[in-house]
Length: 105
Image 1 (cartoon, rainbow, N blue to C red):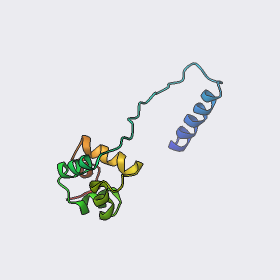
Image 2 (cartoon, helix red, strand yellow):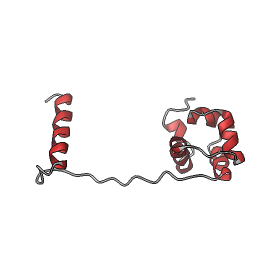
Image 3 (spheres, helix red, strand yellow):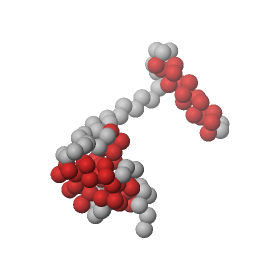
């Protein structure tokens, strides 16, 4: 069976399961996804500093402008959802950007 056929079969099984047409022999995986939390200006700065990044490097990693990072740290605005998710990953692991290949040495 080709990779395409495997994916197609899995999708067809998922559709049948959701319709209530399947109940036995189906593997169901439940995931817990952590909340996208908000960060205070001090927390944003602390996370950036723990990652050893300048405001400019932090901004490039998050795909935002340096002015955005300055505004977050100054309390004039807040990061949006995708930026908050990435900041949360950097909070858990300050080396995240390196491990994920966002920053390459």
